[in-house]
Image (cartoon, rainbow, N blue to C red):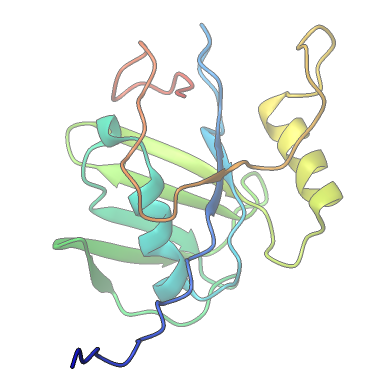
Length: 169
């Protein structure tokens, strides 16, 4: 007689992170990419974002967010065995909803946040405006942040390297 263990349902796959980094170019940018979270729950969304970042960005140890845009969160949290300090600051009229990522000795990256409730069309328009995807001769139509693996390996960074404000991909 062969006995089998009862089948355990596998957990549902996590939705991919909607993140689009600015393409590499010769000039620095004010925005390094666009992030379209699924909710304003920072404790749920931030670990997924950090897991999807390029490995060349290093360990992100500081994150600053718009205080009014996100749910309550502690002053720090552990993500992948790394302590990440969370800072909430008032939104700047010159920098609408952004997430600022800091990696000691390596640099700072600013991601514009697309509101979770935005439609796909609105996300595409915001992305095109911020990353200049819709410029003539760019060879593509505007599109929202492309999903990346929810917890997969981190991506690669272009030749601009770390610590510059040059766009990375």
